Length: 501
Image (cartoon, rainbow, N blue to C red; front, side, top):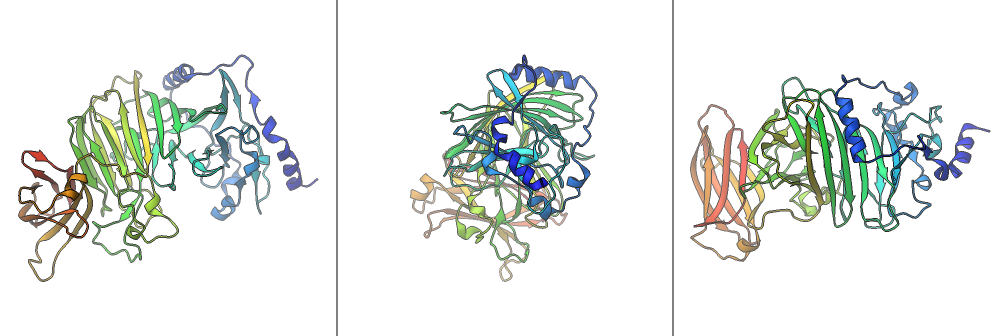
């Protein structure tokens, strides 16, 4: 019997027998996982050798893409449960594997690797051990229609989800360590996953993960509730082997190549290309801040100090197809991700790192929370939060910035840099021209505000703030802030920008 035929024969009965019990008396819950993370942190970090055969690692990109999971072997499909799991095959760049187990009550059953789960296309079926593990897994749920993929855990500590009407865009991570710091970033990984078997009427799927890296370990619990807004509730307990320079909590990762505020030509037919166009923050003091994303020439870090933040996220505000003109990538359907802290997070800062991107193929933006202080290494760091994956326009109840444009004129004061910031909102759109509505523009060291105006746009109901700056010639980055007010009331969020003359 040929190898291909053997695989097909084995596949027929695999789903019913794919779970292998580890131990008759084994039990599992979050406290067990937390204890395991603590014990792991007490030992020196030991990177795991790859269990992936060399032949799989030598596959080309196209060869690796030719390996596909067999939909009929989706875990729980034959049981007609609301959630299903499919698994990613190791190989190519995925040289590390994760073990995946199913939790039913307190009992644990590991999912063994088997070639019978996959269609290898033109590739040769490999000879591998059942203990090899998987590169990761995807989750299916009838979000818009049966069999929709709603999320995946794949690579290091990355995961991402979609909501109704959305396509994949930005990602989240379990932890960011020393991101943007001298000496380079550390990428801890999820070593093992446990997934609770859902009930026939389950509306949420629970996933546990064990994280490990040179500086820290962690126990994670994810409760994933898909819908018009998919909500991922995260509870984590971290243990540092050594306290890093920057411990990034609730990190989000996205891509920004060019947008309305880009005056560099990339020879691209699309007006905008990005998964997210801004960082939004709702501070503990009640201020809303909007920071349009950029594609800087070199790495750029911004830090927004806060105490007990109410939320932050990477947002896709431009929602019209005309903003992108892309019939393949569908950037207008990429979700926003909003982090909502649960409980008090004390003092710290939301940090934004922007890297230069030559194209749209790599993520170049990340945002996360950095605590002002950490407990002694070895003591637990415990926090909870929700990530809202949404297509809805997430914005403050007052006015909000909808566009940022930057440029010069060749005929009128060409030495000045001009900024146009458009604000919208329920109150603003209903207001006619009002001389009491005024712009408040703040310019940091390195430039001078020459003039500013505000006017109602009669064509779309927005309000446009226009202001011009003159650089002092030192070439230093200049911090800018702008909002609208009608004394004594503030009418909009605070637009925040770092201008590089």
